[in-house]
Each structure stands twice: as structure tokens, then as C-alpha cells.
Image 1 (cartoon, rainbow, N blue to C red):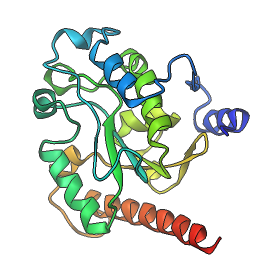
Image 2 (tube, one colour; image 1 turned 30 degrees about the vertical axis):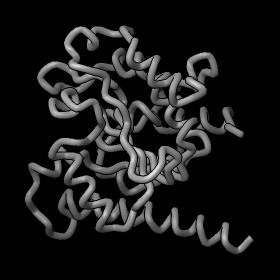
Image 3 (cartoon, rainbow, N blue to C red; image 1 turned 90 degrees about the horizontal axis):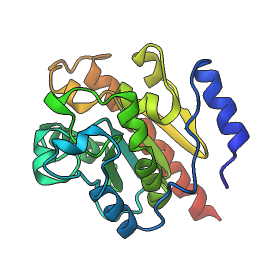
Length: 223
């Protein structure tokens, strides 16, 4: 059961000027087929005019995954292939997830269509796709959410301020615990592997998520 009053209180503490985007049952697609049909036919913002195709989420094992990973927008390769995070950024992300032992995940983006020149999606574009993202959250039913980059963090839970500080805390979106990490596209431009480098900080976040999910499994097995 979603605790709406608590969620609104948590999010208002993060940003006094942020107006929460609430779950809207009229927007939620109730099946994967409905979600696919709705996204493929979407013309809610101007991004549809230049897309090759709508970019769907991809998953490791099943769509009902332990971890829901949310990026900001598709790139050129994703636009061509129609799947999220299948370019160079996705390859790096897969390597890191595999190395830390996170085996059950579903990866998607805040928006479903590639913005021109790979720019960040605007607030209105993010809001146009919000119904699709909340549908994925409801359908995946993850144990945890990972937001990659500032756009995803601000869209999902209103995260503002210094990004490094956001990474050091666990946040909340309704009943879902949320972590924040650098987008792998940024990590590709950061070759350093030293302590407190962007890659090191991202690795720490993935380890925290792994420990959290493992802890839930242990609790479940003890019942």
C-alpha cells in the first residue's frame, strides 16, 4: 500500500519548491502489452517527430526484477535498436552490475524517445512520459530503485543539490528505497579508478544496493 502523506512529506523536505508528481491511477498501464501499445503510439511531446522508434526497457532475467534502474533518455544506438542502454554506456553498466553481483534488474529511461543531439530532456518532456515510468514501477515491483544522473533523480524523487551528496544517502519514492549514482555516460569520460573518483563512488552505491537486496532475501528466508 502506497503511503501518500508520508511520500509527500519526504519529497517536500527534499525541495521546498518541488511540486510532487503523484501516482495517478488513470495514467497507469495495467499490463506490459498495454504499456507497449501506449508508448508506441505516444505523441505527447515533440520528441516523437524525430525518433526512429520508441525505446523500451530491457531486463536481465524477467521483467519483475529486484532492481529498477532509471536513466534519463535514449541515445543514438538505443534509438536505432529500440532498447534502453544497449550502447557504450549500457555495456559499462552491465559490467559493473555483473561485477557487484546484481543479477536481477530492469533498465529504463525517464523519456522513451531520443532528444535531438543527445541533450537532456526538458521538464515538460519528462512529465509527458511520467505515466509510462510509473507504469513500469508498478509492473516491475522492484525491491529498490537506482537513478542514474541528475535528470532521473529530480524526476523520480525531486532530488536537488550537490549530486555527490545525493549519492551518499538513501532516498524514498513512496514505498521504494531509492539510490542515486553517476550516469555511465559520464563515467566513460572519467578514467580514474582511485578512491573517491566517480567510478569508485558509483561502485560504492551498487554495493549498498546489493547489501540491501541481500538483506531482504535473508529476512524472507527466516520467515
